[in-house]
Length: 456
Image 1 (tube, rainbow, N blue to C red):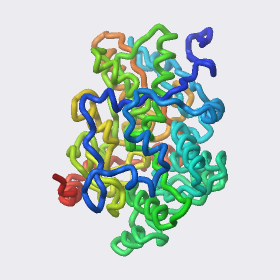
Image 2: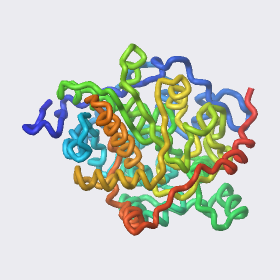
Image 3: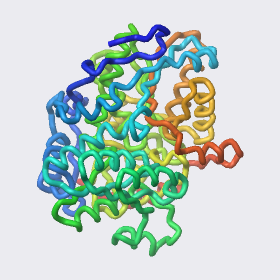
């Protein structure tokens, strides 16, 4: 463990990288409501999930072991970019003239430029072990699709990516990354699946959604048969489990700095970067820690702040499991904001439960405020953040300014979930005054919520 001479970046050595993932399931304030079969409405069994996932991931999904060993083969791959640095944002602090200390965990240093490879390589590894030769998946902004394509190249797996059409057009170079790592990518909805064709029949100009792309990827996997499985980049328990290496490293690094967080912040779409970053601290909070944990989502897709906590399908075509979560309705199509990774209608059941139990706070912000924060961060700390990440930065800035007003020197830590080097088109639109805020689409969401499954 080392601390550089300016106390700006806090590093861990490779030997101090966590060797286990943290599983929050046994530490939740109450058990999760069981996921249900989309056709029968009965609780899912491992056999029900076996057509989609390898058995090892299914066992992780339901495990009540507090810690799960990371295989040595994955540790060797993690060493390509892990441990990642925890950085003191001292120039941002000076710009804001705040007594607060601001740190960020820099997950943008991975090969794909985000936190997503933490679970992508794990999922590819377990699939390869059980004989899978091809994976299908969805992606919003392309961060997940590129991460799984990278993982597929490491384990010699074919990968098919269904990318939400609006992001497919907004972020062309993410498609290039996906193809460079050997995967194929299609703008969703497509005419390759029944789910896609049904959407196009209703709306030939559909911008797509993560719910639609999930439907297409699931259908592709199920109908391909044999050695094709489906891989999900967020929401599910095993995905958030793999991401906890982020929070576990952060805890060690703060100990080196002699600091403890007063406020933890992460952007939230499906919950993977947020859960992975904060879950190791949630157990401390439930034991008496006063840390404030904030999930930040976009105003245009306010799942946690405006949606009900209810059972809903994980996808538009009702092929994915029914889960108890905060939701805007499975056929809700959000506005085409540039934070494509935050445009999911639902939320991870674990994150949802913790918000419902008031252990985690949730806020939503407009995209212009987020882009303003991204520009400030780029000017002060030198890194261009992904549009998703700017939501966490905006809230960190807001909390630091509250400290300035009150004179309290709190410690604020946020997850820098990915860089924005391939999102420059969005920043150009912002700088040219072409980015607009989208109001909460109340009527659209009300209409979508009428279609929630009738459970119990």
